[in-house]
Image (cartoon, rainbow, N blue to C red; front, side, top):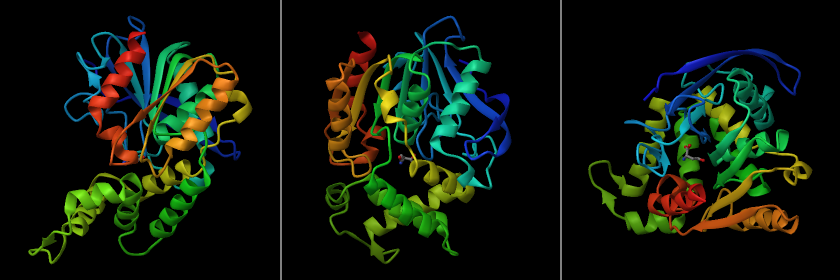
Length: 314
Ligand SMILES: N[C@@H](CCO)C(=O)O
C-alpha cells in the first residue's frame, strides 16, 4: 500500500486576494490511481492525510477489508494546507476560508487529472470543506457522506470558536487551554460525568476529569502547532457553502449526525436534510446514537461501519 506523502505545487490566489505558493500534500491508500473507484476523505480539525494504516486516525473504517476497503478503492486524503503535518504553516491564517481550501483541493484533483470521484467522505471541518467543494463543482462525486458537519457554521459553533480564539491568544499555554475548552465541545456532560464519577486523583491532587483534560491539552501541544490550530479554528468558524448551489449537487447525499453533538447539532443537520429533500434531492439522513457528542464520529465505529457499509454497497 502506498502511504508516503506526495506533493502538488500550486500557485493560488485566495478569495482575500493574497498570492500563495502552496505545496499541497496528500496520501494515497489502496489501489493505484485510476485502477479503482476513488474515495476522497477530508480530515477534521487536528487530523491529517494519514487516514489508514498503523497510525491512521480512521483505521477502524479505512483499510484492507474495512468498510472503506482499500482492496476495492483508491483512498485519497489531502492535508489542509497549514495543518503542519507536512511542516507547512501559514502565518496570516485569516487570509484563508474553507472556500479557499475547497478551491485548493479541487485544484489538487485537477492536477492529479481526477475528474470524477466515487465518494467524498468528510467529518466535522473536513465535511464542511466537502460541502464547499460540491457547491463549487456539483458533479464532482457520485456519493457524498458528510459526518457530524454542516454546510455552514451556525451561531453556536461560531461562538465556541470565538472562545477558542480568546484562549489561543492567551500568553500562557494557549494551545493546551484551547484544547481543554474544545474537549468540552467535542464531548457531553453525560460522557464526562459517567466516565469520571467525581473520582479524585490523589497523586496529581485534582479530579480525574481535570487530569484527563490536562492530558488532552498537553498531548495536542506535543503533536500540533499553535499556528496550525489558529488556522483550523478560523476555518471551522467560517464554513459557508453557497446555499443556493446545494440544490445543484448531483451526488447521492447521506448525512450522518450524532444525536448529542454540541458542535453541529443533529437538529441543524436534519433541517438541511429536510430542505434538500423538499427540493427532490437524492438525500438520506442517519443519526448515530451516542452519549459522547461530536467526537462520536471518531468513537462509535460499529454504528458508523453499519451506516457507511450500507451506503457504499448500494
Ligand atoms: N476532535 C477532533 C474533531 C474535531 O472536530 C479533532 O481534534 O480533529
